[in-house]
Amino acid sequence: MKIGIGADHNGYELKEQIKKFIQETMNQEVVDYGCHSCDTIDYPDVAFKVSKAITDGELERGILICGTGLGVAIAANKYPGIRAATCHDTYSAERAQLSNNAQIIAMGSQIIGVEVGKKVVEAYLNVSWAEGSKRKVDKITEKEKEFTGIDFSGSTPKCS
Ligand code: RB5
Image (cartoon, rainbow, N blue to C red; front, top):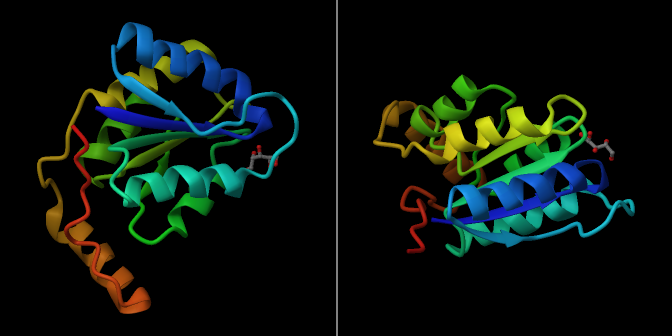
């Protein structure tokens, strides 16, 4: 599975730890969309980069990190075709994929520590949507089509 990761300055350090965990412990490919230091950046910029890569079919999943996990999720959810969920516990992370087919989870470095973050990411990446709650997810996609004129119903990108 190809996974994109991105963070603002508040999430930078947690991002580095989560990236290492996905690569070295979960043996999955990670593409890092920044940021690459604690210098201040605007969280929508990185959220949009990861969201675009997902809707372009370059990634299957994304992890976004800011201070609270809220700003990056709000920004990502403005991106047509994206379902992003803020998750700070393993149950929500698992359900974000199984019930909501969320391509992205967001976390806040000011809310959780590294070890909980790893567990949350593991819970999210270890499950795959099997069309659970499809009728409800389809309604979200239909509303998006109504607003944008674009049909995202086929967009569950598979990269490998
Ligand atoms: C800093 O921009 C801070 O607002 C950000 O890290 C995040 O917590 C926003 O939701």
